[in-house]
Image: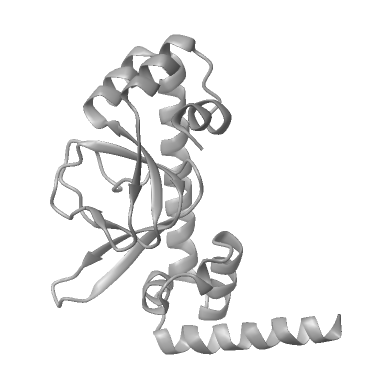
Length: 198
């Protein structure tokens, strides 16, 4: 997928002048697995829109323990820190797998948001979706028992449980890696039993 396809098919933008300006400013960038492309404490200067791959937001607490805050894997997801763009990032973002992004200069993009109503509406919609997802995630992590958190992750992040490091998924779900391993083992057995029955 290229930038134009993302803007038109994924986001539904139609204004020809806006699309021409966006595509002129956009760059499709490949980021290899393991690359930290935004560091905690740094001011973001670029907007990353995910085309493919998996990215992870994380922070390290005062005791040196790493905590996974989010995963981005859906095409079109803005892979950015959860704070205003004019403030230093409260977390780092790393490519969990090889990733491809449409990258836009942040300042120019925000100028376009103010200039084009269609982009203003998209910006507001993406913000609302991110806020809704963040609130729902906090509710799940804080209120549901471990098994239900695991089942929620399987449904909300299909396939990721076997593609992402156990430690990172366990941190995100607020459980120990050992608990997650037991649940994954039980899931494999259930799936294998299902295949045998068919």
